[in-house]
Structures are given as structure tokens and as C-alpha cells.
Image (cartoon, helix red, strand yellow):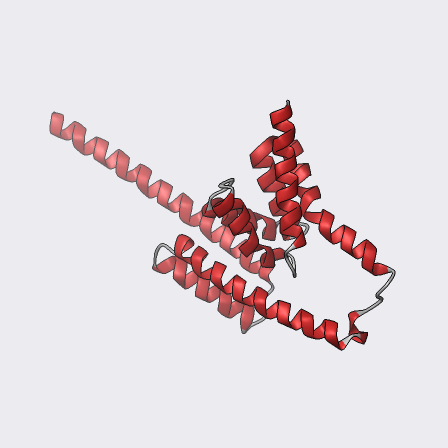
Length: 200
């Protein structure tokens, strides 16, 4: 029982750290999640984290919260999902409660605006690094590269909403998987038929 409690505390503190040191939320959490969950603790693999972000992006709610829920559930079941979710939102909740009464808007503070610009540049650099690393894991053939570039063009140049890209990718991936399974099944039937003819 004590070991279980320790694991819950570790999970909570890990996501408190992720929530406390990430500015921007969502995809901006990817670099620190990669470091904390994959490199440091080994709780998930890079492929799993990519899948969690993909599912988190395509389901209702905040990406970071969804990912924390998935990781917590994988680690320690449904209660782990709750603990992970609470951990990742705790820092934001506390900071907002402390600042809400003191600062109505950062627009009045040029220094705060400059600080946020600097943070955004750092987040952009971290995201670029993670994208390069994860691209090496996910882009395994020419078609993967083609769909990635096509998605980028549609989103960046034609302003297509990401939800439609996600739905299209889901449908396309499902159809391709079914097609490959049918081809594999047909090949197996053909091989069995050839083997039986040779035996005759």
C-alpha cells in the first residue's frame, strides 16, 4: 500500500513539474513531457507519447490534460488518470488564483510583454527540436512524408481547420490499414492454395 501511495505521489509531482515549467500549454508541453516521461522516467515510449498527443488533439478538451490523463491511466489505472490530470492543472490553477486579483491584463506592462515574447521564442525552439525527433519516428516511408507536407500546406497556406485534417488522416489511415489487411489475407490464401497444389 505504501509503495502504491509513493507511485501516486511521484505521478502527481511529475505532472506538477510539467505544468509548472511549461508556457503555452498543449503542444508546448511536448518537449518537457518527452524529457520527464520518456528520457528521465521511462513511463512511456516516444511512439506512445505521439499517439497520446494525436488522440488528445482529436478529442474534446485541452491536449495537455488529455495526455496527462492517458499517461496516468496507463501508469496506475483510472485513479492514476485522475492524479495525472490534477497534477498538470495544479500549477496553472494556483498561479491564476494568485495573479487574478493583482493583474487584470499584461497589456499595461511592457516588461511582461517582452518577457512573454522571449518565452515564446524559447518554446518555438523546443517544439522544433521535438518535431524533428518525432518526425524520424513517424515518417517511415514516402507516403508518410507526403501526407505530412500536404497537411502542413493545407493548414498553413489554405487555413484548413486542424480538426478536418485529423478526421481525414483518421479515415485515410483506417482505409489503408483495411486495404493492407485484405491484401495480406488474399496473399495468405493464395500461398495456401499454391502449397496444396504442390502437395497434390
